[in-house]
Length: 265
Image (cartoon, rainbow, N blue to C red):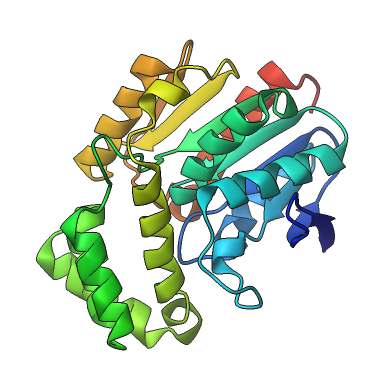
């Protein structure tokens, strides 16, 4: 595991594998980067794949973390890699990636953003954010995730209940529930950043699945409208978890963009 020092002195932990041009991955919520292991393994024969353990989800660090802090972490890692870097972000990690592109545009040769849940109004979660936060404070992580899955992710009530039970029954994931709500609140704190993202000139691929909740596709479309030259790629038959269900397809999208912006690989 490589450790890099961020701008505020915090140690940023990353897992790296492979050799070649660098691909830096910012994982989604309720994870520590492990879920991207299959994609990383597929890329590692041709690329140096670096998975950041996002500070929002590290139990050894006091939370919550802001998106600005997580962007600074990504920039610090990119600097330590010492060369052109392709940035990959998934879900809330893709929101952190967008902020990273604004913070240090020259640090990244390109980016693949997999369904970032950017706010298209004052906030992403609205009243659901406060309800989920209250559930966490009351010691009810299952209820917090049921609210999150239903009112933020957009799953049906039945699927939201099943997903929340699965989270509550898996201790490592259950322990990350408060951090997931902190992550939601961090996105809420950003508000609608489309005007800022219009300044991004890094080559961006906006990745989504045709089985994902419709609002995620709408957010990708909104980003495509404001980020110059952004290209939309849709994975057929996949949703928000294609990195687990179809890792080869996700790896192929990343590799193709890496070849375009990094060369070689």
